[in-house]
Image (cartoon, rainbow, N blue to C red; front, side, top):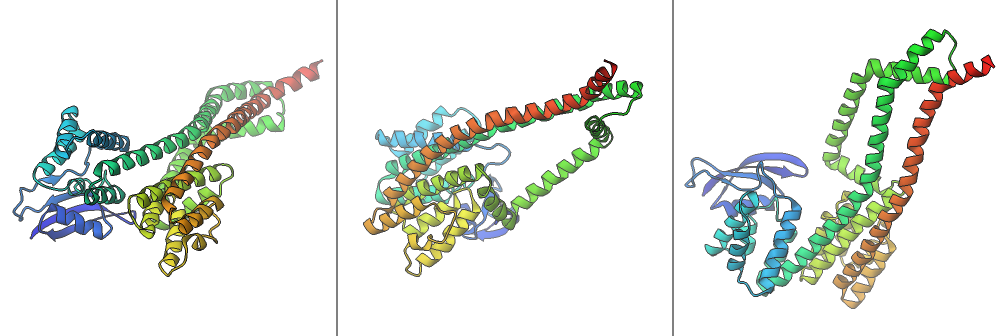
Length: 404
């Protein structure tokens, strides 16, 4: 037995320790069985190994999109008739340097040493999760590894396209808000102080809006370090809270209740859940395990909790559609399609259709949200800046009127 020191995360919290196993692969399997997501695994100095660290993605990270491209390359080569070892060798030659090249070279070496592809991939748990490994194992067992990799590539590509649409919907409002904050910052830093000096020289009582604006400018000039520190502390506290199990659960639930955006986020999560469940079911995974895994990768802990609660009833013989009947966040379409699939034995294809429907709806939602937010943000920015300008010019207007 060898001793291994590990660092990782379990339940959203960092953990570290030592585990004994015959080899690295067995150590990874044991830790995965304990629900630990590995970040580093080192063989102890007292073991028979060389003390080298297993490459799990240290300082240099491989992007998820790169893993998707790699999966598509493997799928294409295997479909073209390449043996797995030759496909790995071919891809390895295309990668010149960097962590991706190192990983592919290591996978190729593992296959040449007689390991299964799933075993080789399990050495990189940061990049190939349980769903990926389960589908690869199913493909190896059934002799359809090329088909499984095609499904994995399609699933990952669809998820990434969905995530890109979500980011595009959020980018414009974020940029507009940043532009407004910068514009107001410039006005309070340079424009308002000049008007304040001019108003003092006038020696007149200022209108209420103007006085409020000057007081706000004085406050910002005096206390801006405290304001910035408060914002940083609040942001850090929120981030730490969201990393906890209860905080993440509550935040995911709150996000689904937001006006306009909540419905879009729900569609995003349901689309991922349906696509993953459909892919797993069509790959031979049983219904309970498929929906349990799909709930975990939906991107929303509240939806995952609802799915786990429903699956507990399914284990006692209740149909999944009936178990989800009292879940308000689960749309009627998903429940009805699950019910039709359970009656016909075609839950997998039904989930793929649900994913297609919500993919289309998210595309339409992105266009709708953008069309709504764009004029709203323009009007909001114009209104805020306009009120500042009016407050600054109001004393001048009053003085001109009084002098007529």
